[in-house]
Length: 115
Image (tube, rainbow, N blue to C red):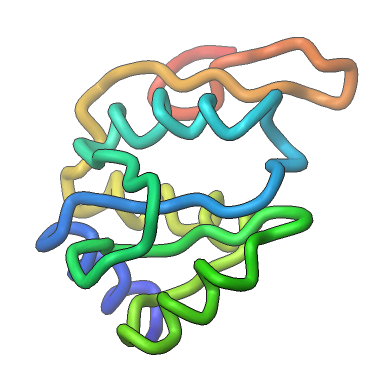
């Protein structure tokens, strides 16, 4: 799927699932804040109602296999960050500031706000 198809799917299903350990965030729960800013909920497991699977470092193969079997788009953590401006462009970002860590581990606003 291309980015526009993934965005359309997220607009429809309004949910995403994460597997593995994020490299760019402190932990997986940081995704909850990000999802909230885009009007998405976090799925604990992959189901036919999951809009997207985000694969981080050391992912659970079971979730990947399930998403693949259900034709759910699968993106890497880096691809997710590339997708975020597309979600904003279609009006999914709700104005909530999202914090991201820089190389020093300092969290700074990167989406919708001043650094």
